[in-house]
Image (cartoon, rainbow, N blue to C red; front, side):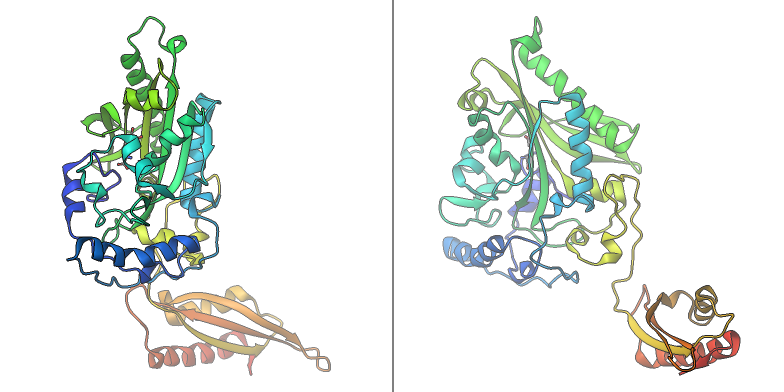
Length: 412
Ligand code: DAH
């Protein structure tokens, strides 16, 4: 997981990485499960950044081998998608402790430059403002690069305690841990004198923040070892990152801190304090569910989606092949002793692990003879390579012979 960057404002590694000239493919978003307007914004964006900087060349990235449909609901709003499952689990935990927390997961991802950067005190020369890093929709608007873009807006609406979940966009390379769209959850809690009592307010906020987030980490990961690391974010002071010890390595799971007083004041809560955090949902899901590649979140393949169940945090993802299947049909008149289990055994005895599925696709009973015929579709697929038609034909002939001999059925 090293190199999977959730936060842009905290670590040196993240900053250096985002300094790399952003090469971007637009086509990879087409047909993906992003709202249409986002696809068209992204399609239009590289041109703008080329002209803005004059020197950039956009390279094309290979289209990831995960086909999807554009129309489905956003990933984090699907209850049985891994991102939706984690979101719900975090909501449940935090709302149990604090029923006043309101949740928002449909805020529009095109925000003003002001909301994305100025309102949360991102310095004018910060690398994240570069069009190589952030998708500018116009001179004054961007695709949000973090959910912190909505902090001030919600405070100004009078919301003192909220969780925001949303897709965020950063121009980036694509590999198993980076994708130009991912999901964040932002939390913010305003506190008043009735909370801190005789304690020093900032100290109280820090203590409550840490307790809350340690509890959340335990809720998600069980009893893991954790540590707090000092960090830098423009919108908080002091700022921290929470790390957990996972498979022998320290893994950063969230960034947080005591909100800068000017943001709290601007938001209409002068005299109060606030704490806030931001976390990356993909990173959590990859760790919790053993998902090895961030691109998988975008797939419509039922071999991925069907492994996850709403409400279940226990799933461990079982990898499947990226090579294409090869289908062969076999049809026969049944014998009295025929069972599907026996059929599967015969097929597996011949083709072993290359058999992915044996599925009944047609059943028919002859009106005169009363005999029933079944047609099965066998899916052959390898985890390691593409199969050739010749080798599968050969297997299929053996399968047919053995079905006939061992199951005493009449091939058609
Ligand atoms: N917006 C930060 C990022 O994307 C994450 C974050 C850090 C959000 C600290 C916060 C916070 O609200 O307090 O890198």
